[in-house]
Length: 503
Image (cartoon, rainbow, N blue to C red):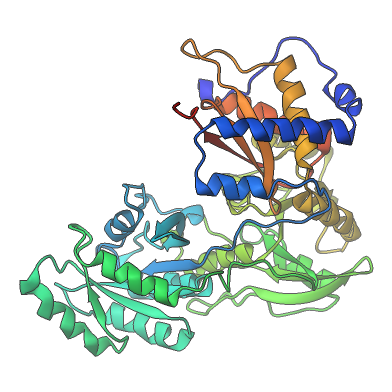
């Protein structure tokens, strides 16, 4: 195991919970205020100050990170999407994945232009078989449109508009989203007429750019800012109504059976005929006296590029469904060993920041031998989500289906949970006093101040004098769970390394 993969292991025991119980709210708040004032000696940017202004002691408040407007960048492979993303970001990022993977269909990056922040969604990173490429590009673009406030459609001006481009354009024109057309690879004035030819696509003015040289990108971004809203219309959280649950799992694990049983009726959820569009199906369901909005998703195949036609489309739609949900129920078939696919789907949930419940299906078919192997598999393969509530069910018979409700409620309550700034800083101070960060290279990074920046998922920010080891960060996360719970939700722990002001 690599050093970065190991969690920090302190020597000796501590009574952290007991010591924290002796610190009253007033003392904790005063200590946090003192630490907050001490940050004035350090170089802070406007983003830091905005975050610190929100450091309030209201543990019942549900707080969201700002819903930044979303710009999706779509287009055929090799038109220069990734180069354009890098140019907009102002740095080189690993935008394109060489190996297609379900969890990497779209990659998001935070970007800034003229003081405005927004999210870029790059839809590159895959290349399906050549025969299905036009359908795949269109499917990818459609998912991007679903999850974006505006779309930047990139075309290779040298090659010109292809039949694949025209297919995507038809979908984009019907989407109702603002669409900007970037005519890439226009490296000089001589090539300007190539961009003009793209008026024929019917998307309005083609913006001539060179992602390679940066030519025209600033003007393009000015136009992008004119069409992007201040706050995202698609990424913002919905308030009120039934909590939204995504059913995830590999094919034939029992998702549709679970939805049918919960709904109390048979529904046509998935049409397996090749070439059909398999969308997630929203269904309001009353379970144990509560109404939930369930989304049944078509199964995720082993590799996206192997899943052609409807399967490829379904795997993309699965990601879209998850991003619109609040909590994911990942179904696992206990009659079969836990697979790489299962782990990948769980990791997809973790990346999305959604709450998580693990439902072990077909429990009525489990014999003693398989049970022993299953426990070993859970211990080895699911250790990184040991905090997720587990429910043993039979979707086919409906056995123990009602147990899903307390598991969902627990996960969502944790997802919404907030720790007051005073309490959190008291926790950090007592933890560090008992088990300080190891000295690295003659220096020992200190934690100056901490605050919970957001809920859904719980997101903490630490202001430090140096980078904390990954193992020490995982140790902080584990102790947070031990003291405050957070069952069923990922915990995000970010660092802001700041230096003292120069006098």
